[in-house]
Image (tube, rainbow, N blue to C red):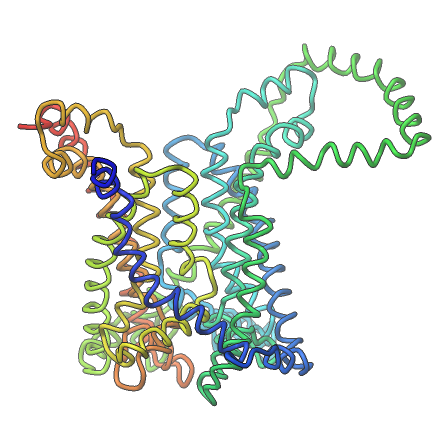
Amino acid sequence: MNKLQKLVRMPIWLTLPAFAILLAFFGIPTVVLFLNSLNAPNFSIANYQAFFGQAANVRVLLQTIEVSLVATAICLIIGYPTAYLITAASKGVRTALLVFVAIPYLTSLLVRTYAWIVILGDRGLVNTMLLESGLISSPLPLIYNRFAVYVGMVHIMLPVMILPLVSVMLGIDRSLMAAARSMGARPFAAFLRVYFPLSLPGLRSGSLLVFVLCLGFYITPAALGGLRDAMLSTFIASQVETSFNVARVAASAFILLAVAAAMLAVFGLDLSGTQGRSAGPARRSRWNQLPSLSSLARYLNELATPYRAKRWTASLYKAASNSRLPQIVGAVFVAVVMFYLLFPSVLVIVMSLSAGPSLQFPPSALSLQWYRSFFGDPSWTGAALISIQVGIAVTILATVVGTLAAYGLNRTFPRLRSSLTMVMLAPITLPSIVVGIAAYLGLLNFGLIGTKSGIALTHSLGAIGYVVVIVSATLANFDRRLEQAAKSMRAGPLQTFRRVTLPLIRPGIIGGALFAFLHSFDEVVKTSLISGFSIRTLPLKMWENMRHEIDPTIAAVASLLMLLPVLWLFALYVTWWRSRPSAQRALLEPAA
């Protein structure tokens, strides 16, 4: 009986509401989707054979992988030195730079894509400036091609690469580099042999995130690319819109899912950097299989020993260089990256104030006509109201369920916690189009297609994951001895949670809630599958207007949406600042 009571009181049961939602609207539908792709109960791989039997399908799949790899490589080339320079900056400068990186990361994906249409279009900023200066006689083809796709995707994914790298680099002890330099290592050698291996976990996780997310890109390639730049997500979406053959769509979705799952299986199981270290002995063993080359290497190494000793002695007493060139180059590089991240948003805000019949930069005169057009059009305000209603519902549901799940996971075994967390994060790590199709099948069984409740439940699949991540990070720094102290003073479990735990983790809960709202307010792909023809959220209406006509009103809408991340950061700062005195009160009065 006592064992049964202990089992019932285990915190892991707090994860049941979250897993119930995931199972009903994502887990079971995904299994059904896979069975449909195999033509169950008459199992066959005919749908997969039909996919690979068409050269156009294979070309789209290879193109999706190629675009994702190239975008990831560009993000890595730009993001790694940017993250390194951010961590090397002073605390104040570092904080400002991280805010500049976070603002575009939190800005709507649709808004950032629209900004590049305004910049790269035939009548966009770049072509207009070149035409007016007389450098070109006709607009350059800067949009609807692979170049525009890379520009847009890298702009969207670059913060996803920088933030994990900064997180890992901040934990690297800089004195290790100084120790390597004191032993005669040159700056580049010290970086390559000491700093770089320690930063591999951030490099690996950032690259994995960027690549997997790029695989599921739909909006940006469709808006900025041409017909030859279609991604597999675009191909699946066209299948859904034209003839919703569940078996064929399921096969295409699981082929895309297989690529993402393969990358997660290979690189996602160990992000601690042990993989990179384990490769060293293998390389040395293969080298030792060539005795003649090994002997030559040892001989050359012995010849170089006196030179290295002399260089170490000379560099040991050498005066430090006063050259400021590396600092200037680093500052210019970071400034260019920040300009690339922030300028599109600033440009759209400025152009939304144009008084002319079309968007202009710089505006000939300032006017709020496009904002009046937005607030005076019932179709726009109605779509905004629906997005707010759905966002609030998603925020409440995801915050409550996600916080309970994070608390339960924090109190369970580490191995079980890791596995369950990965399952809970599947809707935000797997391609969005696959999650949307699975959610469509799940909601179809409950008759919720084309309803606000269906849209809210679909958005909650990803929003719960964000809340779990943020609240879990807050709980990781929580001292559980405070709860034990409160219970020792005869406080019950509920009173302890309300008076001690909740005040200390409140900033994480509020941060998770804000992330959940932003996630819902920015969702387009899954909403387009679930909404039917009766409900139009604000991002969905923006996407439809972008596809059919460039309405200047979109610039005003985009400018308003850009205020959301700024308000989010301000609310988060106020929450953290106000949480300090409440935390102190919780410590002084744990069970009053």
